[in-house]
Length: 254
Image (cartoon, rainbow, N blue to C red):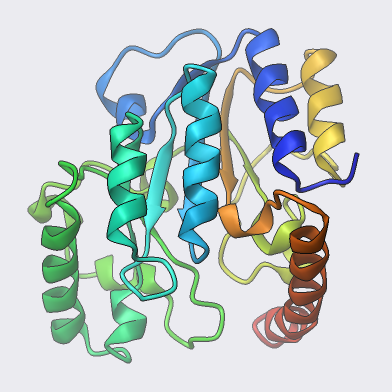
């Protein structure tokens, strides 16, 4: 079975259940008592919002709640899919990129942030957010919080600021590969955990052998996961092209 298909994703979810991980949202991580083994499913909806609904539906059928972070830009923001994700009982969060949208203007970025957050709260009482990496932008969106406090906007947590990644193992499919720092400019963390993961099957094997830490955050991008061979091939070719550009950007910034 090829990697990065919805069938493979379902196998991963079932493997997590069989390994006795309890699924919690990012919001619940900060507001409820943690089980002995827990996993946060975080989905960054950078584009292809209909793919997010496919994943959300699959999770709902397995009695799983996840956290979905939508951007405000047209390729992500789709009110129908947002409503459907919320209807399926998932958490909605804001995938913010306001400093990049404001071209580094901090005051303008704060105005945009407040406006966009208010907009998402029409659908769900948003309490968490997550930065969008904006790899083609020279601005790191997290820089907005150097002098400002997102808690002033009733946001309780942002993963890159509020998680201890020496306690919770972070796994991301950014750039359609797992924890691949060669093609990841900003979606990476400092951690004591070091597992070589080349494909989803390896994660499943680690779960079956009880090799992974008790606390996990798995971050996926729905546009990476295909629901058929033509879509899978299209995604593979497009992401392969993008990754060559990202490698250049990563080298320039290291």
